[in-house]
Image (cartoon, rainbow, N blue to C red; front, side):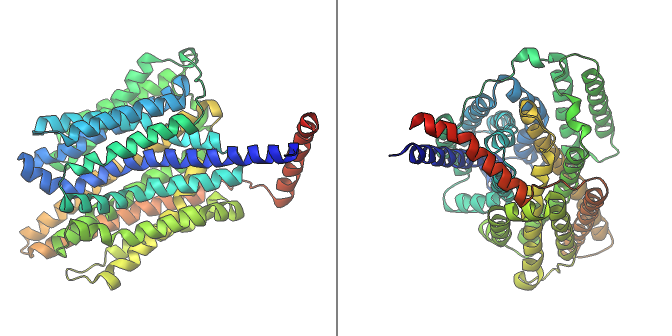
Length: 502
């Protein structure tokens, strides 16, 4: 074997290892993402099994979302300080253990407590994932392709969870929606240890701001708790207003602190980039609007059209397929050809049009004519927009800040989704109650509430479109000539190594 052949073989092995590492990281992320929606399908069965009241049942979901949304920023920064692979593995271990405990839960208190622990594990593992992917794939073309894979997992995980939750709940029992995490989690942890390099962190001296950590974590957890309580207490209730004010004050105190200390937990230089700030704002509004389709759309299928859990999952399958085809097969080519901003804007517009079409669904809706077109449009929009958003949101991050930047991306998605769901669900309920009071039938009143939520979701997506057009700046993409020169330079850099070996 010649020295050149040996070097080429080594390069191919390294490249294969990087892509395998990507798939491992995405498998772990998929498990955490779908854990939110896989439970939703099983909630009626869990209610019957453990005797939950309607208000108590909400805490099976809320107990996961509160620590998950509250700890993302802190966990992302801790990943930078301790090492991203280490943080990923610790979070994965906590998540696996919590899943086992959830599957074995015999009463309400056990399940809610174990779901809280699962939220802690998910928050520790998920925010460092994008940071590790960006580090694994520093070149623009490869990075765009890798983020396309991640974007599919992040965006399609919800609909995959609906399908998987329906299958497991109906075929076996609700316990299996948690048991399924065990083999996936163990295989992911094994693969991460084998394939992902264990790079040391910056160390706590680079930003171990304990008071700052307490401020931002408390702010986010109280804020998420306040939002999740809106459907029960209302936006104008004393609880919502007081908790929101406390959350805002703690967040403001955290930002002020970060500007005054030498080693901040969250260096604010990350937010100097218009594209980073704009991409996270767009993602928050886009996810807030989309949650109306995934959650209220599932309720429309169940309560109005009479679909069972498995049929709901199958109904959303075309969306998942379209997302996957675009994210995995075309997003990288589109981003490299037109740039992330130009690719993003049409995708966001398609999501908005899909939500407007959902607002026309009748009480006796037909799947092929009333549901499939908007589902496909949303799939097209998400499949092109999310990889572009990830690329833009990480564009201002240095390797030292990649975990934090990834945590900000995850936080904007989760908090945007929580706010969006609270707003849309509350508006839908109020519209339904008003219609019932006016003498409308049950199905017509429900559908009217859903329609209002879809319209408000479309308005949120319209705001995201305006931000994309006015705030984002076109990111210069490497030309073919620059790429060729770079390739030539890399070959020249390798030639001394060939001669030395030979």
